[in-house]
Image 1: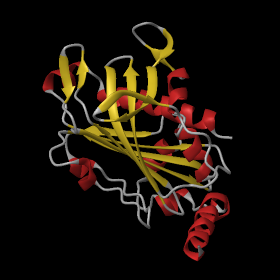
Image 2: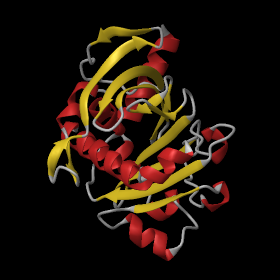
Image 3: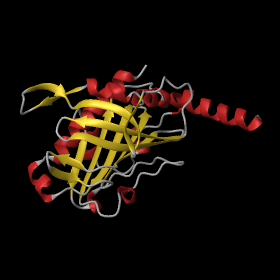
Length: 256
């Protein structure tokens, strides 16, 4: 009983006392260049993409049980993306962010501007939780808002992507007193029509979110094995940036 009380008190402290302990952007991301910093605070954010892992230069100081590292991207990623953006919205708790990102069903409501159609359309035409890799047709409802921030969690989702059709992802969640880390990995092959884009478990993205003094810092590190055909015909940085825009809009819209 005492152990349960101590655990509950610790988690409640984590959920409700974070805004007063926010670090500055420079404390979380030390050592980045002036140019990278300026881009991170711009509306488009900082974005790097390429085939060399050595060019991934931003190392967030996350601390605690959260690790963000190039080594987490898998054994043979041939394509890398690094992105950093500060959203000018303050006094947001990790619990609010967590509850917002739990509402998977709301993701399909958010739009992006399609250059080919010249209008705003849903990036994800469908978004739903599923029971797991072996039960992709077993749908689950989104949970009610939590009152306590959990330390870790795993969920499985099906996103009907406007470009890639049904995509299946495993999303694991880890938190500490500073931020939230989401690890996203495809557990089925992603296709572009009949063409395989990424084989199963060959795409990994780490999304680290921390409220800082200047706003909400969102850092993304991703690695993928992408076919040469897709690399020549799909603008991977643009695709990532559009998805970051939609995810950030979805997250902010759901924060209460």
